[in-house]
Amino acid sequence: MRPTHIHRRSLLAALLAVGLLLATAAPASALTFGLNWDGNNSPSEELLDDALASGATVWHQPLEYNGPGGDWTNNDKLVEEAWARGITILPTLQTGELFLVPTDPEWEGWSTWVREAVERYGVNGTFWEGKVNPTPITAWEVWNEPNIVGAEPRPAEAENYGAFLNYSAETIQAAAMAKAGAPTNVLFGSINTQVGETYEAFLGGAAATGGLSPNVTGVAIHPYAFAAGAEGMAAVVTGVREYLDALPEGANKSLWITEVGWPTHGHVPAGATVSGEGAATLLDESFEWIKANAEADKIENVDWYNLRDFGGTTWDGWSGLIAEDGTYHPAWYAFQEQAGAETSGDRWAAFQADTGTLWIYSTTRGYQDTGLPMLPGSSPTIAAQPGGGALVSFQNPDGSTSTYSTRTGTLVAGLATEPEPTTENPLAAAFKAYISAIWPTSDAGGAFETTAHLAPGTEPSVATVP
Image (tube, rainbow, N blue to C red):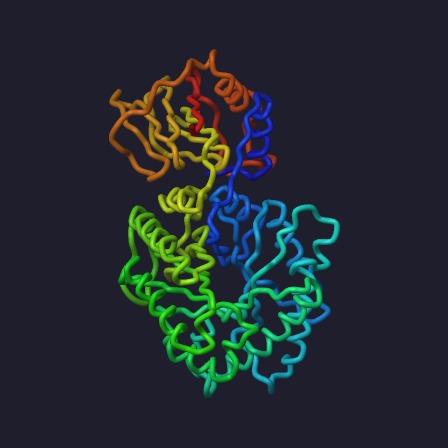
């Protein structure tokens, strides 16, 4: 169980005393990698800390609709927290469940709000005044999955959406030109290719009413393929690209994969759930295909759905890189590698706590009680792995030796390397001092959900990713 950020940062400060820093780098290619919020209104600071550690440079989340002239406080907090970490928000613009039609009383107010959002958060927006190294919003997704029209759809929903998008895109581009003197990216709202009206029918209907006008620069898609895997996802993306290329107004539109993923639990509309290792493999396979085809298929962005599990009975609560309890799924490490996260320099530590179990700490991931019992009085050995994660060898209560992989969350074959003696390793000494003397003995201050101490007579083992 991870502590709050107060104590994660406290330990970082202690380790900084011996000159230890962590750096995270963005991928070098034009293709950007992002993550989706957990959909459960979790504190943005914690989620964005994890997004930064993952290597993501894009955070996909709806802006809160506050109406024209409304209170921007919550949206300001989201955008500022992302900016503080060098992350760009890719927002969904939405209000309610159904997109608007001209007869809705909110039609004109919607346009005003959209203009205010672009003038505030876009390039040269008022929000960025006085801020160094701004991360303005440069792409605006208009609605989420408009092709899922509900149990009682209005007539001609694709055509309705095309008119709504055209109306919104005109406003967005006018605001961008007024503030920055240049157009911005406006995205056709993400089409879910697993459920809802088919992408051919919806794109075609929307195009007839301006949904692919010059003001719309790209098409967002959710190419879920729960039954067909990465090959199925690739086939969907290829199909969308070919369909757009066949339309006079579609060939120059970029593709944005604003959601893709595979769940490990919950009800799925087709196919079946996968194991944690299976999700990691599918992430690797799908991202490798996207990288290889990004230039030819005009793919500008891919966002995994999602960052963290939030539970429930359906698949969408079980597609995260991180479990509800804060532990890291195998897909976390796959995403880090694909996104180009700079894991070099990541510091790891392992120790036997006074609970008798193996505990692990990482400067990017915080604390985890593995729950694995250890031989009393024994000390583990940890070896960091290039690409993320660590191997920890330890003695079981019966005296045998096992090795735990933080990358897979399972016991694996092989042994970690021998550590330097604590007296010769300043990192180990600093860590031992921290968990022995500074770590509180109770949760009275609300700092920890779980507390532990270094077990008597044992030593922590530390390692740095090369």
